Length: 268
Ligand SMILES: [Zn+2]
Image (cartoon, rainbow, N blue to C red; front, side):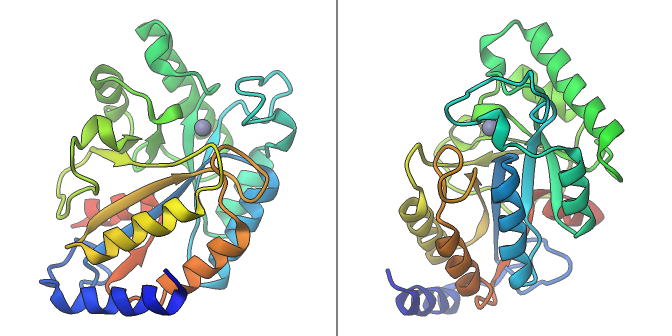
């Protein structure tokens, strides 16, 4: 769908909606919330993602690996090569510019494939590291983003005693629903997301967002990684720029980081 059709379709969809608030206190016109939730912490990509968001007055949703900046980090060298990752100096700078930095994982293991006590220890080490190294971060209010969107109810419950929300596979926590429901009133939240890879995911993102905008509303979280040549299922930077330009013209849509929406829900 080209840009003009996208916007036309979106505006047509707005006309058929019962415009109930999704719970974003700052703007009751919004029936749809979208979070583009970028994982892993590619230095070049994350600065560029931040810049593109800034062009449209938006905050980026960036989730990073606690130990990714250490030379010893070697999980998934094909998709997360250590030498492309930023460090907490970068994450503090981006946070200072208003972007959201949230915990993704301690060392990017699939926590459903290791002993549960080790998995819990890794989650706790990750949160501790963020508390110590990311300025202004507190786990109360945070969103923990499971690596591989892989979790079990036990690990979700454990993590939800420490943070305000967890993000995991939508297929795990939302069954057949394709969006997180609104209104939501109680924390902590179990949030579902979706993604596509390992090739470029531009077409997938376009399709999913169009389908979401044509629907009745709710909160769609798409899990992305790097831009252009970086990461699993990358998105092209010119596509992201064009997408945000179009999305910011849709008055019933809020494009926000996950933690910001959680914070607004908790204020209700
Ligand atoms: Zn990851």
